[in-house]
Length: 192
Figure 1 (cartoon, helix red, strand yellow):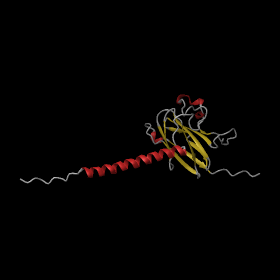
Figure 2 (figure 1 turned 30 degrees about the vertical axis):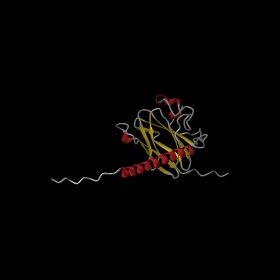
Figure 3 (figure 1 turned 45 degrees about the vertical axis):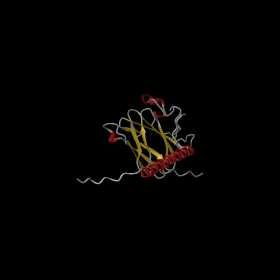
């Protein structure tokens, strides 16, 4: 009776070579992770774990609001912050502020007019359930949770229409949850 040929066995030298290869892969991945974290700390792109939150107004405490009491916050009047003459107000950081509320399968305001070429700080919150906030054609994509305020600064370079969609399933009316940003060309400077 003949025996079937057996597969060659690996000796300890071959196993040692594979272990060295995997050790090298692990070392390279560890170095890349360390360099990524270090560059994030140096460039200031790491998330804040404490403090007053990134650029929130005084009614927003540490990035939170009471979703049942938005009347006491700037979210009571969603849209671009304007003065009595209807002109956009520039905040202390040199950007325009816009407040957006997501809830009941709608975004408020339904249409937001923004100037092209001007940085705009968007303050966005949800009132009922988790929602998504994605500006199509850009890399802006935020998850909105009730009571949490997402603050981000964007600059639209070209005039036109930008759509914002909810990309987080929020219920039966989810497919209707859309708003528009009408990016308008900058007004010509007044001549003296």
